[in-house]
Amino acid sequence: TLDLNLGKVALYQLSYSRVFHSVCSLTCVALRIQRSLELYIFFARLKTVPKSFRCPVISTAGDKPARIPRYSSPKQTLEAIMKIATWNVNSLSVRLPQVLDWLSAHPVDALCLQELKLSDDKFPAAALQEAGYHSAFMGQKTYNGVAILSRTPVTEVVKNIPGFADEQSRVIAGTLHTDTGPVRLVNGYFVNGQEPGSDKFDYKMRWLQALQDWLKEQLQSHPRLVLVGDFNITADDRDTWDPEGLRETIHHTTAERDHFKALLGLGLHDAFRLFDQAEKSYSWWDYRDFAFRRNRGLRIDYTLVSEALKPLVSACEIDRATRKNERPSDHAPVIVTL
Image (cartoon, rainbow, N blue to C red; front, side, top):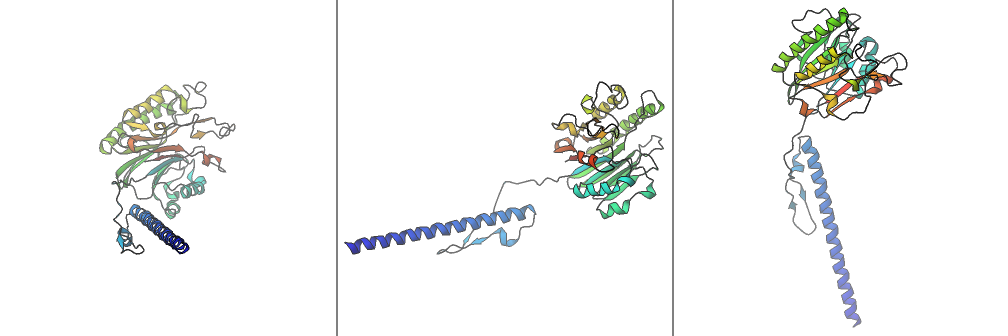
């Protein structure tokens, strides 16, 4: 009887040992399969799957090598992400180090600058090229000036509004070539206007009308269009810290806002307002009266996207951090993600 019981114990121990060994073997196989699939997915996303990972061979104890079938998943579309930013730097010669630092921290595909305040011969193309950006620019000594900085060269460059006589450097446009098709980028430093009823305000009204007429033509030939820049207009009361106190003053007049609505009427959309945004979100603050600290600002820097690009917009934000720099621009960058 004792021998029989000891034999049963030995048999049970052997059975348990085999079960434990089998479980361990299966666990190792599962882990190796999981690791192989993870590696396959990683390389698949890079579109370079080494042959050794396409059909991994897993060997199991006591069995012949088992070939694991290729990982398969529903067809995925790899969407290209494109970021475009606009920033009134209020003197590129003064703010160039800040621009380079910002591009290093935020490597956008294109950065549109306004108020360069330097002539073409002073434009820092070499420094920007070293940072990885091509430049298309239209400078002007002391005032105005616009530029498009881009990872790839822009083509079909147009400077100022065709057919509108203007001595000031306010508009530059170019075509960006992407994996999903061309994007027409228009960068504008809109006329300030000084005050309603002045000659400069009349010039602003004529300039805005000329811009609308030209953009209407541009949208017909370039349906994938983005209009960015310092508009010097508050679109509505949400875009000003004091809507009642500033009503019908410069940037807040009905005439200016009607022109903004006319731009939207062309089929453009305010990318910032496509998303829920915090109240009192502004892009410009006066240097005086601690305006930034008190958040007494205006949202006058915009990114408008055409109907064809609207479904692709995934984010739009204002980078307030630059306003905290030493000797900052009074404007903050606005970034849209497609």
